[in-house]
Length: 393
Image 1 (cartoon, rainbow, N blue to C red):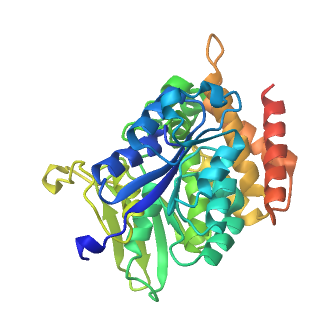
Image 2: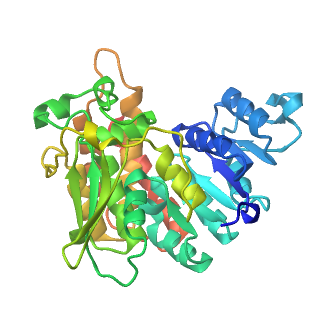
């Protein structure tokens, strides 16, 4: 492509102070000739957001924590439009001056943001798991209405599968392989996993991520949610998905085709690669990170996950089979349980085993619910959260 013909992509970053958001801004700054930042939102990290607004000078900025108002904004930052509370995400998602919307907020707020962005013709770069897990049918229907490539995955595993599928249109896919490091409890006995505390769960061996997703990676709920996401994103049933424990985190995922060929995406464990791949798609731009050195690789090993030690994988498959709002309930219960887990401490801290128990009990108590509209999904989410909180109290 002629460099003079390249379009500058205008980006709205929802969750700009989180791990994904800050890395997205890092690569946007590295490629300032290709990306402009149109909107930035954060929840409560106001000082960090203020620094980002000074650096990128967006058209819109927002804080979703309802305690903030315009009175909290320094005078030198009032050159842009400020929005507060829930409306901050929706305003950024629908902003006329944005081409692409990176949804990297945590939680159900991501679902409404994704639907708003797609309905306004934006290309969505999806780094929020809850949107597809809780409202997968709603999101995929909206993405189909928005057009081809209106929804691009940012998760490293789904990005890897998406990359492996490029040029494979019309060729039957046999198996999607989702890899994961196995987390800090990969070799632990079940009894030890069930007794593990937050301090132990936060010691991820490979990736540097936010606290909630780090705990999910330890319990493999992160992989359970990714199974659900992959079923929606790529239109496959659970029997055609295989989770591979891969401690080296070099193979980020793979696709097996009907002729027996397997195409895999390899790279260093650097989230800037899938972030920038989505931002620049269909082009590839340098991340500035380390390159994979094949000669330094001592081994690449793969293990079958143990559903007894990690019941999260079994729960995901059961929820997919149940349909309706079951996946939404799974996600909400896990989010509540992990939130309490991260807050616990002192002489009687909450343990990993309690997370599994709360999620499974919530699924049993809530039962079958419909998820055919945003209102039904939000109601299922609310009921699941109330149920999980009651179990924890």
